[in-house]
Amino acid sequence: SHRRTYPTHDGMLRKHRLLRPCLWFPVWAVHLRAFMGTTLGGASKPHSPRGEGVTRRAGLVLVPQLVESCYQALAESNCIPRKWHPEGRYGIPIERIDCGDFAGKRFIPLLPGAADRLPQEIQELLKAQKALVVSLNSTKMARNGIEWQPGRDKPVAPPIDARTASIPRLDEEIKVPRFGFAELFAGLGGFRVALEALGGECRFASEIERFTRQMYELNFGATSPPVAGDIREVPDADLPEVDLLVAGFPCQPFSALGSQPAFEDDKGLLFREIVRVLNASKAKSFLLENVPGLLDCDGGRALQQIQHELQTVGLHDGQPGYAVHVRTANARNLTAQSRKRVFFFGFRKDLEAAQKPFTLPFIPELQLRAGDIFEPESKELDIYELSEEHFEGLKESQKWARRGGMTDTLAWEEKVCNTLVAHYGTSLSKGNSQLVPRPAPSRPRRFTPRECARLMGFPNSFRLTERTEPPTMWFRALYKMFGNSVSPPLVALLASAILEHLTSSPQKVTWNQLGESVALRLALEAVAPERQAKVKQMLHSSWTSESGVVSSESESV
Image (cartoon, rainbow, N blue to C red; front, side, top):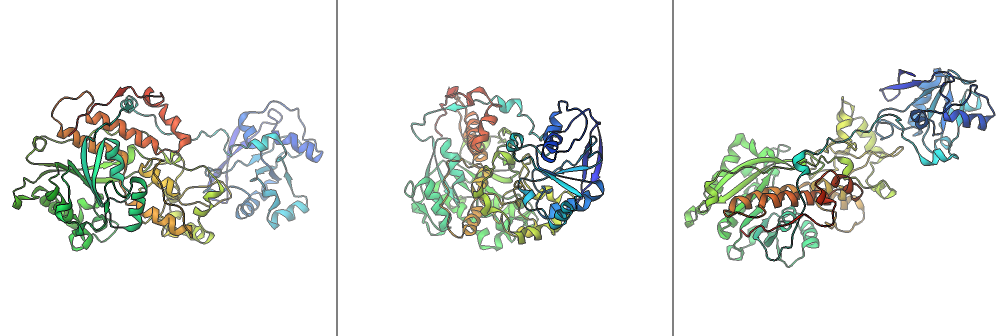
């Protein structure tokens, strides 16, 4: 066989299979003969798998001159997949019939049930016997379903690198807390998910947003410890001593998405609450997170000011201050999204750790993709689907129309997702939110809150508040919470590097080794359940066994 290109209504070139007469007998021809009592001619021979894939659907048979206009009418009536549907992403196969009484005509496959909603233009052609609908819906093959692009291999993620694949799962029983930590601007508790997995004990937490605090307490309880509200109202005497202080301080004053007012904004001044808590708690170390825009905010002066205030914490009270290291890290290796953030690592200057150079740990790469976090297709996802008004606006937007714009807007299964932001789901008509393609004839949809949790690396066991009515208010609130959160798998790695840096004596299992294992475990627990086994098979054999290979004995800080 050979191939020919053919332009379609969606503006893409589609490839046609040209069948050698009587050497390959299409499956639909057999059913057409039985259905219409027509002999197409030629002896039936075994068909190729590629041809079998094309011909298991009901379809429209017509002359070549009508293909263009009929294709457009079918597309506008949702009778065939479009380029935003998984089935139509690469176009649909339009077959040329090369043998029998219909030689030279074309076969356009239709969506299930499309024969019952054909547009008026097609119905008139049928009445005039200028087109023919071939129904295969009663056959076993049609019920089994097919791929719209037979012979086209689905893109697959690159293989996991050898070092990641060699990391074992470390089973352990944490009998006593290894370190104590405080969590400021706690949000959903992304830091806490990671630090408790490393054996830490939360001794103080604060979160001012009421609904976010409810979700935090839903997962961690309201009394261990009690979750404070406004950190500015917590006196120094109520702040316990801790080994590690963590915080994702408000990023809006430093984000490149805004005007970057920095310390001229009240939220920017909340950073100084971190300085106050560090002084009162005498924390041995800290891990702070913010957006990359902080590095260039106010010409770099905001970063310099933050570093200076951290380095001089408590000097007027006889405290030593902190050695500060600024690094950027991306959660991309451990989640299905690209999420670059700036982190501040600090060590109290009276400790040996402050005198040693600090380096980022190895970040394992799981090669996760959008398909690893999707929920199974179901009617329950309809509430996340774009309205017809929003979708029509999106198709007219500059982002959708520009070259590659639709590719950026849609989270195809093999793609790495865009950074999840707090305003996700707003300005849908402008193309500012990445969407999930749905099977034809459905419109694209938003991510579900559970998919957002997985994108961030929160385990599937992390509980979400019950859905309220109207549901849009509920899932938009969750979008904001997860968009403002940190990625627990990445935090586990970075925190373990801090704990390793604080440790001076040799250990059977180092903090970095434990951090790698915990990061992988958290990342795997955030993968859709039906995809976890596939990912585990590419890792160390201990991830698919009933128990890990070694018991962790990392010492306390």
